[in-house]
Amino acid sequence: MTGSWICEKHTEGYAVKWKIKDILHEEQTRYQKLAVVDTLEWGKALLLDDALQISEKDEFIYHEMISHVGMCTHPCPERVLIIGGGDGGTLREVLKHQQLNAVDLVEIDERVVENSKRFFPAISCGFTDRRLNLHIADGVHFVKETSFRYDVIIVDSSDPLGPATPLFNLEFYQDVYKILKADGLLVVQSESPIFYGEVFRSVYRQINTVFPLTRVFLAPIATYVSGPWSFTMGSKKYNPRELAKKPADLGYLKYYNEGIHRAAFCLPPYIKEMILSVR
Amino acid sequence: MTGSWICEKHTEGYAVKWKIKDILHEEQTRYQKLAVVDTLEWGKALLLDDALQISEKDEFIYHEMISHVGMCTHPCPERVLIIGGGDGGTLREVLKHQQLNAVDLVEIDERVVENSKRFFPAISCGFTDRRLNLHIADGVHFVKETSFRYDVIIVDSSDPLGPATPLFNLEFYQDVYKILKADGLLVVQSESPIFYGEVFRSVYRQINTVFPLTRVFLAPIATYVSGPWSFTMGSKKYNPRELAKKPADLGYLKYYNEGIHRAAFCLPPYIKEMILSVR
Image (cartoon, rainbow over all chains, first blue to last red; front, top):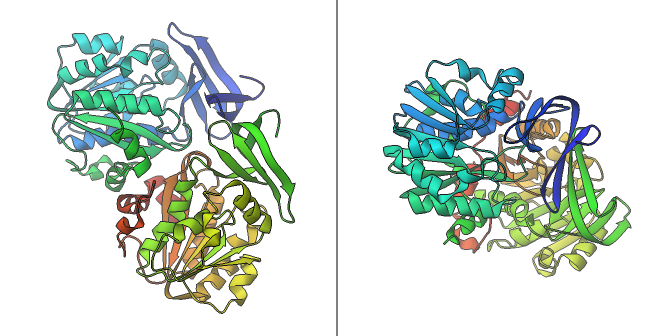
């Protein structure tokens, strides 16, 4: 962090700079460098290893999309597993579903949870919910060892550079498949198809190897890198184009609704092409 | 331009940096500063007053969306007017429609046309088409004085800072309305709702004052500012949700198709809200 700007270098030739008013907190956790900053225009923001994870102003887009698309595709998601998502944003959205009986959240880095509780009360509000079982643990081990079986599993990871790297491996997706019920489904954040095309293709290829039905959906998220952001769903039974549940009972959301659910799966040919060329 | 990076400062608190290999051309035209650079990752790019207008790598997204959404909403666009668009990208897309008899392109700055012909042959390829009438003229005057009547008018302008400023005024939209046929329609680029919310709202408000039907559609364009980019349509008769023409006969496009046409009009609630609050 130099001067009053932070800089995210996404590729060799592209970088984004954010003006900040203040650095509220910095620490080196056991797993990564963690910082909370107050930006000039995007509210408070959480950074892990210098990459912006969430900003108060538009975190709702990412969290609504990674949660409700899967939760509304499944007709009755009673037990849900969130891998990562230590800030609590995905948890907050999942908890809006009335059918939910229990949610396990497995975050490797306790400091993410603690700092989110301290600095982002509107994002971490779900940590007090009685339906939550919080596990400070390695998600890779958890999916290997748990005896629970899930309706929906959501992988809300950071980029495949730091501690999240093993969450982008074939073996992990195979383990996830085993702990999903016979009609369960998986949703992962799968990076920017434009800026991180190799990761995007790799996630698709691996989920497509494991699941009978693989679908990509998109949303542009201003505080992430420019262009569309992608999510990938692996499903054992339900097709996300056939919305199982009308999202009307979710109350007022700011990004997700039925139209957005359907529109997000309409891929432009240049992105379809990236997937078709995956072998 | 400092060192081997160019920097676009979009707001007080947000900037994007592009690494460049070379500055191929720079000049001060009568209207604006014009530069052509060779970027590390996005091919050649055109800048006007230091703002990136097009990159070879993803210009197709903007040009397909500003052209085909309107051209496919109108059942038979025979005569089309493009205001701005001196690089020729919109022209290239419009010319793909077989029903087209004549297209007028009105660009204020001849140097944009000349430099596009020199540096961007794949974008400026339409300038030799026999259906084109090229006018080096002020679009605001042109729409006041022309005796032609149009099926579709496309305003492919730069940001409302330099010479494009009068193209964002109510009087201009009123003049456009008069030179559209009884079932004609207008499409304009209307900036980023997130970063330039005031312009986005203002364009909507003004077009909505003049036209019986106003609709916004979105596309994320990686080389523009992050998040969704917006386009606004004002229509005298046709509703863009009822696609008049299947785009199948357009050959291979890289961004636009029937699904994308429909999906682009699905606005997330937070953007709908911006429009509903327009008075």
